[in-house]
Image (cartoon, rainbow, N blue to C red; front, side, top):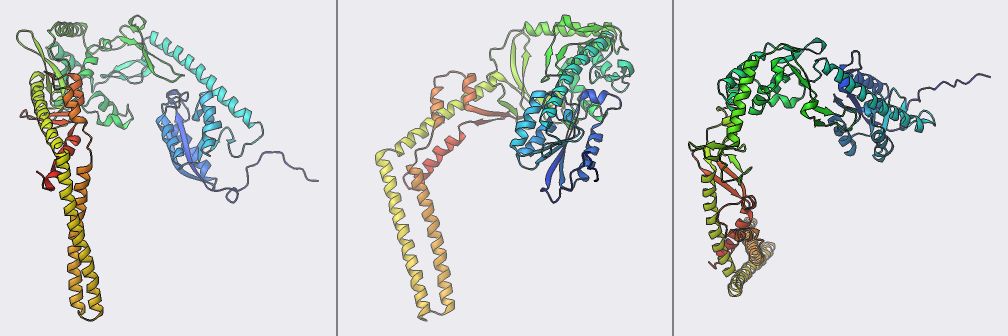
Length: 556
């Protein structure tokens, strides 16, 4: 008797046994995986899984989803969300991963996906290296093995998180750089050291020299933009340090970036780390640490500025901050905050504090594009807040008066006698039009009878028929318009705008609540022209249309 092999074999050709599966590949690479030498790259993962699919004709590759530098302990990953959206839309019904740890390392959430969520969507799940296929489990114990592997991955993630944080702490205490991206002006060297970036170091030195000479952060940012110097994010993207496409469009310097450079002791050659604390295992996020817990190691790398310059800049900034804090505060307190836009570039205008000679401060609105980014991208414009508030208040008062007048007119037109007169006139006009249409229909019917009786030849019949149809179309359009007028007269329009205006009629000035309720947007142009977009415009137009309906009915 021949022996039967107990060795597990590949299932037979499944092309005839099961339908075609719309399959996607999911690959993930954490930051730690990326830093390990010889680790499996995302490209290797995908290539292996593509070969796996090619060998199985019942699997059809639809999409490839991937997450790079993303932890497996959290499912808040862009590539994973994109994949699940494809699952929910029905585009994908099979997911293939290299191993379970690539899918997730959180025991509870991974189990929920494998045991509840994916089965709910009828999605097949294959983990190649684990030999797991949710459609064809290899043995009856698979229900115990997969959760156990997920638990092992979860414990491993906790353990590696603790070890990683301990290792980073040791490196920080030795003065080694542990961050992802070196400070602008430096680049990461061997052994956790910062080395000078000869391309950007001169920019940093110029920033400190300009600041020592009295230039503020905003003016420095404007000069850098005028010189065409790429922002730190744009520079790092161009060098391949930052991979995301969103950094490609960050071409401008902002005063916040200048401020961060001017207060950073890294430019004195000192390493200050541990300002924030993150959870490498959990859901992520950062917590700011108190100053006494920061790790500062002095003289770890070559400085870009001397201590005298750094302290002089700090002194200038402290004196400016003291002056700003002790100015007399403006009377207006952000009534129009977020409502004022540049009429040219359409960006939200910046509310700034200005100081008069007597020390009194007031607010004004300026174009953020012109002031902060580039004078070539927009035009200079400025509007003092007190002046703008007076303009808006005057316009709102006129709108109040106009709306009250319109309401009175509509109320008068809606009076019992007037409304009855309008409706009677419309009813009479409707009856006349219907009568004309009925007569025309009858004439067209008789026309055909005359044609059949050979009282008209074909040419005469077609000509008369065409004229009747043309007249009938015109009468039908007139009838439709009369019905629309009748509907407008009978409808009771919603009028929240007059109610809102009445609430503020006794107000002597514009308040924050009043501006938020009545004004949607204010645009200012270079010649100080002000365009105001009110929130009431649809309701106001309804009132005007109602008056227009009365006018067409011949009542005004």
